[in-house]
Amino acid sequence: MSSKRTARISEEIKKIVSSMMLKQLKDPRIATMTTITDVEVTNDLRYVKIFISVLGSAKEKKDTLEALKSASGYIRKEIGKKMKLRYIPEPIFNTDNSIENGIYISKLIDSIKEDEDKNEE
Image (tube, rainbow, N blue to C red; front, side, top):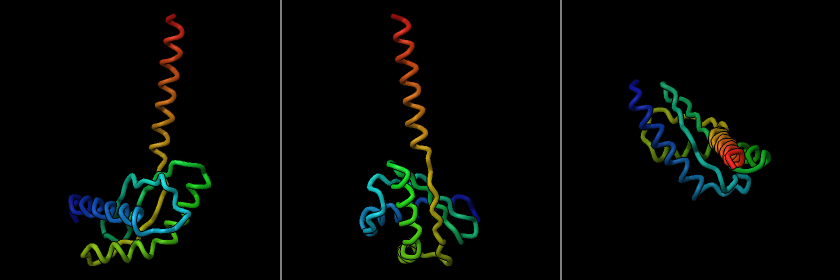
């Protein structure tokens, strides 16, 4: 199967799941600052790994991940309604800490710049 096709399917699933998180999923455990950072579909289209980033405490991350895992059957059904595929991939949710790591690195760079400015004076 071509990688272009799996990339297109991944992007479409990303759009569907992100709009579902905004409009359809009403679980209070899902944090408001939840974003989908990446979606990877396996070559046989049986599974889809959805990477989410939650800006908040560790408890909010854990609760959001549990809520999405419990809603995975509903999410799979909605993906099947909106996409015409032979196999509807089973969603697997994972956390992605890349945004938080980027914020941390940015703060480190800012603190180094401040230290250099103080040493120049």
